[in-house]
Image (cartoon, rainbow, N blue to C red):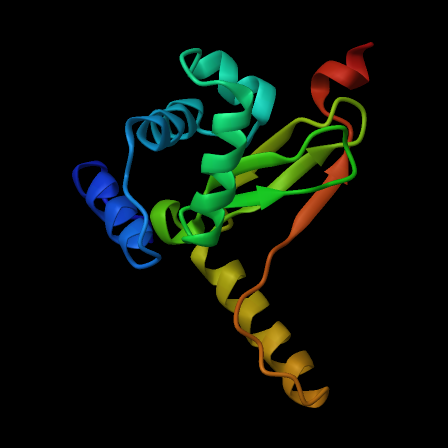
Length: 149
C-alpha cells in the first residue's frame, strides 16, 4: 500500500538520504509532476509538467531517484521510457500498454485475484527453484483513441 500524501515527501527524502542524496527542488518538482499525472510519464511529458527543469537535469534526477527506489523506469519498446513513482509509494498495480501510441494506464486488481496470482506465481517459482520477490503484469493492446483512428 502506498504512503499517505502528507508522508510522501518525507519518505522520498528518506530514500534519497539512504544513498547520500538530497531531496532538491528539482527532484521535488519531478515527484509532484508524477503525483499530479497519476499515470506513468515520458521525460518530455514530465518536462511539460515541470517546465523549470532542463532535460539533462531531469534525466539525472530521475536516474538518481530510480537508484534510490523513488521512481520506476518502464521500458516497453516505445521511443521514450516512462517514469512513475515506485510501488512502495503508490501501491501495487499493473499496466495496460497501447501498442499504437505507447500510452500506459495503471490498473489495480481486486484483492482476491491478486492473492490468486501470488499463489500461482509462488508455486511456479518454487517448482523452478526460484525465489519470487514480486510480480508485474503488463497487458498490451490498443487504446480507445488508437482503435477509433
